[in-house]
Length: 382
Image (cartoon, rainbow, N blue to C red; front, side):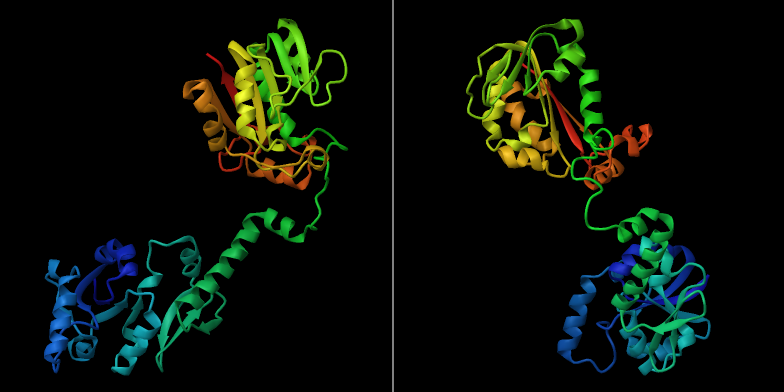
């Protein structure tokens, strides 16, 4: 194996230590705080304290000061710069008379972070050149002098941006799009809203809970659609209370809320527009019969519904933790079932004002907890 002196045993060395040990014969370490001839008593004391704090004492490999390397470096030996300060290290070695042909750059060794991998593939590399300069060579033969590692990282990030633009067409699509959405009405002028897919799928899968005396907010569309023949009485809770079977009531204040009244409550996309959601949670618990259930949905990632915001105010978008924190003290942890619905694609579609018909059925089958479009909650009162 190639014989090398390792200059630097900090963060970069720790990241690539296994590679160095597997691929090189380390014949020595260089350290600017190592002992060297001509040191004062104070320097010697500081050097010894430094040595005791390092891993050098755990190895038989000799440690020397860079000032002494010119005399110790053999014809078949190289120096690996194992620090992100490799530019200043090379300049130091250059001033000590070390030739550029003896220098290797540890930052170019695997394992790589994503940016580093692009920097050193397809022939791209670093070289030490006369005058103590470090140059980065692109794959097309172009090269640029590197003043420090930060500059190299800037180059790496630009290479990564180029790769990502090739790999992800969505980057160019977003970069070229305007700053207005496709629709401010959730795509309803062209089809069905993205979030309604998740809401209706949730109700379909839990329709067996919709039975007996049922309450729904503002209307009874979902009660009748999913309750089928199981519903005995359908009620609608509305602030104004107009029309047959409509109860004038308020989830926040408790107005019109009767105790132990309903076998099921359907409360979809409502809590975002009520400020005191703790009182809402208490009133939902209050209205349900023993063994009754509430089927509840809230928005995660979503544009503001301007219509509702102008009527009632718009206060929240939610996360699953909020639902558990809100309802578990009342219903018990085992009686609160929370699920995230959505992924980055459907979230982006929702924000941009696309409709369900703009996407594919399979787009809705993947759920990513980091991109909640809709959060569904099943509450059971025991």
